[in-house]
Length: 470
Image 1 (tube, rainbow, N blue to C red):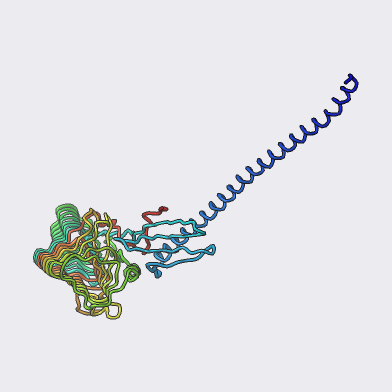
Image 2 (cartoon, rainbow, N blue to C red):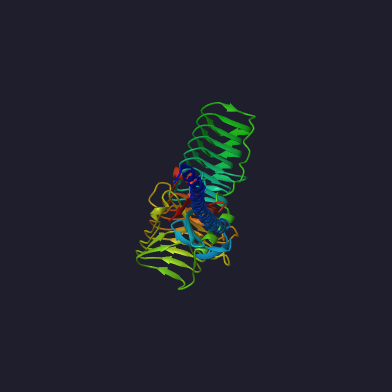
């Protein structure tokens, strides 16, 4: 083959080889792009799936939270809160489960959106500060102390305060409005005393009366419109007259006497008691057997409404795990005990005896023998026994709360009724429309009562826990 022919042959092959190579490159680029598109599509699909799962997960979480918030709203508003129910959002349901625990409730809300499950739990406890500023606070029915009975702390009464036979108030005594503080000279107030009238008293500190101080021994100063037949260690301040009185210091005639003290309301309102009753009833209702008698063993009780009389007797122990409403009379006898579950910690609880249909004759509390009513074991934890009986306020003779013998308890509260304390009773605080103390009965105030954390004056629940669980 000559050179010319060889050159022609070469020129003819080059375009074919170049075209083949170009085709290979095109195919390689095409397949690479397809592979890249596939990879990108896979990642995009996975991203969309992740986004969709994340979106469903968030919706499921918010649905679970909505269930918790619905239950909390019902609890705070005192509305019906069933043990289990469901609500629907986003075309799906969340199931709310409510479990009673000591002093409150545990709420679980479990949602499911397209197999995406989220569960939230919240713990709520009734938490309310109630301030008992005095060892004893009474209404217009007043206070009567006799036979060595004693109040260790201060007293505020909207009615008269009277005492005899070595009765004693260890700190200040205040009688509001036109009320008086009177005794038989063996009745003593170891702090200050202030009233519309003071008569036949031994007062260790100062005495203040809007009208008259008479036949009394005053340890510091006296302030009144008139003073008669008294002994005053220091100064006498009076407006109208002074007669038959020894004054160790100076006299100040023409002094304006103090005004009457205002009547003050009680620390727990009727509305709060009603709220506690609603909380108890929401926990369940006992209707049979009635009367309800517990005479043996340890029984967990509360929150619950007992629709009849409740008696705890013999050596039975009631472990209180929520608010108790007795729609009748409440009685404790022998060596029985009523105590808060230890999980209450420093918080307190109430037992209410209130027969709404017969408050003049029912809703009474009787404790006798050596029964015990105690808190959780923590400092500042108490049980308040509350009676709805209103006989005293209506002019009747029924006793709303009567502890007898060696009873030991925390707080007694009868806003509209009479509390009568007898024998070796030792209490922490008493609030009543009227109060009688007899035969060495003692009320000893504890400082923690000024900020007692009860199950609520506005009836609300405090959230003590809120978290998602697996």
